[in-house]
Every structure is written in structure tokens, then in C-alpha cells.
Image (tube, rainbow, N blue to C red; front, side, top):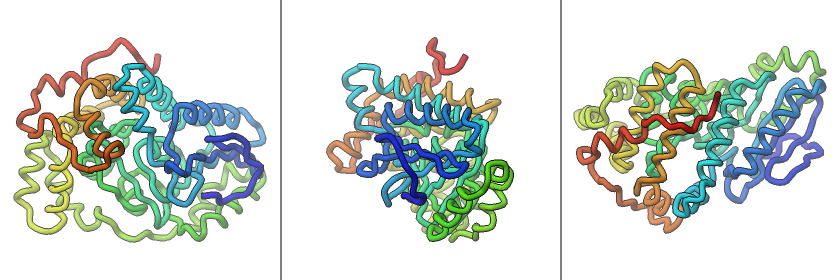
Length: 357
């Protein structure tokens, strides 16, 4: 949403300056600001320019339109590229993951407004930032297990470091959480009512250069409130109890022993997902727990994506979600017990192609 008026330039990535703020706006509102390869490249160029600009004290990231920050990567392109074997999907992911790491180590304050839909790649350009704002409209999710994929964009790093088993629940169910729960899981920092975002950003834009960099957190804090409760408030004890296992089958068995609507909804959400994706995802998260940094997790995820395009669930998941839109994927294999160990192991094979170093 356009919270600040400025002299924006660009097409799918808009940039401008407002006071000491460098502005970056995602500008594909008709497709929920889904990221294209060109957008990722231009986003990185904007960060490069703002980082060395002495008149810019901080960067602000928003999404155009009224539906959300970003719905993720362009998965139709993934589908078509994987079918064609042209390497475009891999090239996009390589650029995207490097951008995620770039955001995490950005030298200046990185402010992002995560209102509306913030999913998949949208989480990647926001939750790795330093100053992450949510509102009552925020719907954050990593829904990849529902399309035969696994949470990527460094999500294994973020999810594995969420308190208790909140990250495991998010990864396996793919369910959306609200702003307050995003803060609880460590994906965001402040809850600001949407009606006050423009006022807050306007105040930040008026701060002089030296003061802006020093007072961003305290200025945002003046506008924060407690957000409405979400599923984590309702089911936190159950989540920590049932999702502590290292095997998906044991997690499902634990859920089956639980009573109540939350357990039933959670069980229904998981059992609708790709069995292969569930097993790969859980292992990604468990390995990430002992990984030293984000880059290590991104390397592991990138190696896994090279296998994703070789298995049928990826194409079936995207077909059901956005090609035919019947929302009724037929997974292969259809049962957890039929997923061969070597099928999972293939996602973790060491690859010669590296992202970093």
C-alpha cells in the first residue's frame, strides 16, 4: 500500500527517497506483488545504491496495492521452467536466496511493512530484515508443503529458531498466522494498527539524517499496540507437545491422540499436504537447528530445490493450485509410509553448485 508519496521511479520495483529514507516498493499488485527474477535483481540494485548513499539512513520496503506485501515467487514460472528444463527457476532461486542473505546483513536499518498477504518469498524479503512491522491485516505463511515444495528463502533458519515448536507447526501445516503470532514466532517485531502506519512512516521521513538511524526503534515503539490473538495462543501447549518429534508419522500420531477443534484442524491441514514434502521439510528444520548461520541453511535449501523439479509432486501441486485450480492434488506417493528413505535423501545430496563462497 502506498503510505508515503514520493517521486518513485521504476516499473516492477519502485524506488525513491523521502527525507533520509530510501524507499523500495514492490509493484505487481495484480499478482499480489509476486517476485519475478527481474524484480529480485532490481531490488538488490536498490539496496546497493541506498547502502552507499550518505543521505540515506534507512530503507523502507512496502508493497503496492491493497492486498498485501508479497505473495511469494512466481510459481507459474517455476512450473513452466521445470517442465522445459531451461534453468530459469534455478537462476531465479539463486538470485532470490542471495538477496535474502543480503537483506539479513544489510548495513543500515531495514524497515518493512508486512501488511496483508506476506507469504513464501514475501517472508524472505521481510523477516530477514531488522525492523519488521505487522498490522491487523497481516497473513503470514510458508505454504510450500501444499505445492510439493518445502519452505525455502532461508525459512528453515527462521522456523528452526522460533520458540518451542511454533516453526515446525508453521512449516508442516502451511497455515497462515496473524501479526501477533508472527511476532511470537520471531518473524516480526512490532504490531502497528494499519490506520497509523502512514503517520508513523511520515514521522520517520521527517527525522533528520543522524536522528533517524538512532531513533527508528523508539519511534516505531510509540505506535505499537498488542495485536489480536491467533492460533498460537489457542494451541501453543498442544503444538509444543505434538510437534517435538523428528518423524512426521509420530507428529500425526500425537495429533490423533488429542481432542479438540485445534488438533482436528491441524491434523486435517497436515494430511492434505505432500507426504514427500512433509518429510523433507521436517528434516530441513531439524538440520537447520544445528546450522551456524543463515547462509548454511540457504545452501541446503538451494541444493534441495535442484531435486524438487525432478519429482512429480512439485508439478502436481502447482497444477492443482494455479493451473487447473481444482485444489485437489494427487500426491505420489500418497502415503507417508510409502515415501522411500532414498527419495528424501536425494534432497540433501551434496551439490557442486554453491550460492556463497
